[in-house]
Image 1 (cartoon, helix red, strand yellow):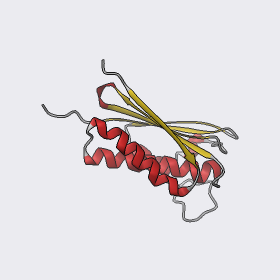
Image 2 (spheres, helix red, strand yellow):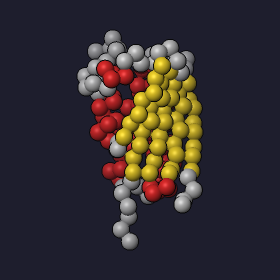
Image 3 (tube, helix red, strand yellow):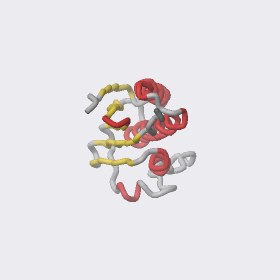
Image 4 (cartoon, helix red, strand yellow):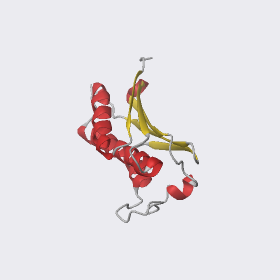
Length: 145
């Protein structure tokens, strides 16, 4: 069985750090030689999860977002995006398309829907007042020999 590889990074909950998180995860998973489509899918899902942590978890740059990425056996990737912010009152409601707890009318409420569309599985762990962790899973295509 192949040994896994892990990386973790933490940064301030500033929207300018979303691109940094996306690029860091893409660079880390590059060692698995993903297709361009796979890398773009993962980058999109990471962007959504990090943006949710920043906007809904904290709403200000005073918090910390942590991104962990594990490369697992058989070309699988697990990415966890965590905050220690507000948490989610009703996870099932938050997963519904067009739902948003934000007063900002520019927010479409499609974050979890987008993550689900681009990843094989997502898991949301949240506790009101304590924060949220979004776990993203993807199995990359096998390379033809």
